[in-house]
Amino acid sequence: MNNKNYYILVFFFAVIFSLVNLPEIKGQGYGDRNRAGNGRFRITGKIILPNGKPAVGIKISMSGADFTNGSAQTDSEGKFLFDSIPAGNYTLSVDRSDEYSSASENLTIAMDTTPGQTFNVYISLVFSSRTKENNNPLFSKVPKASLEKYKQSLEKIEKNDSKAALSLLEEAIKLYPDFAAAYNQAGVILLKNNELDKALGAFSNAIQIQPDYFDAKMNYGFTLLSLKDFQDSEKVMQDVIKQKDDVPNAHLYLGIALSGLNKTDEAENAFRKSISLKGGENVAQAHKYLGRIYIKKNMKAEAISELQKYIELAPKASDVDKIKATIEDLKKPSN
Image (cartoon, rainbow, N blue to C red; front, side):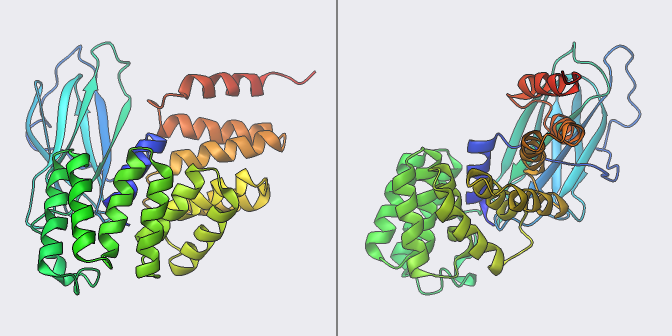
């Protein structure tokens, strides 16, 4: 799954994911620093490639007022860890390469934060405009002029200029109407802008051109989900999973669609499958949905366990206070 899906996830789910059992990877230059009074924190994270796979062996740098020239390298699951970090403002970044654009995330740990907490950071890499698209079968037949427009659109995306990027993609499609990747990328922009019907049409066009286009099918199914068309979304996600069974978000989306159709047991299995797959950046969401299922089933202990896991994995989520209140209600003895 490429970067398109991760724009979507961030936009709709405020993604915070599970990063347990990470091997300790210390950033260079701070292991011997031990300032009393500042407290100590852990910053864990994950870097994902545009195709949805973990970014293995990627160097990530960290800088801040109390931390300079620190770096770590991702493990076999794309995960990294900075340990014993004092409170402060930090920037975590991946340098640009010939294949990927530069990427960064900012993180603030307030001085009055309770020591010992872990903060999660998620970084999704984007193909650089310098990537050799001709190595990808999606681009092998695309005329040079159309491909150039597409590459220019990626540059605009890197600069967060979605309007210009969309215009360039429209030009690319006009030059080459069978440009499936351009339709898909346009759909991602439209989805991010909450233009759901237009996004659905763009993804549909991409699939009609390239029926086995996995990313476009994922995006199409997710857009149907966003439109609360649970029945069609279920069908699409079932087809996606038949094509590739090891994508955590495919099972997550399927579970949400099944929940919307009140297929509770099937939804539970889908969420469990999503959690079981390594590298699922939306695993926290799966735990939350499982909690809701167990509430419906009046399985209070199981519901509390799942909701607590959600809070542990997503401590900064906007609904954490509401979830905590739900847990307290579940703990109250029944009348």
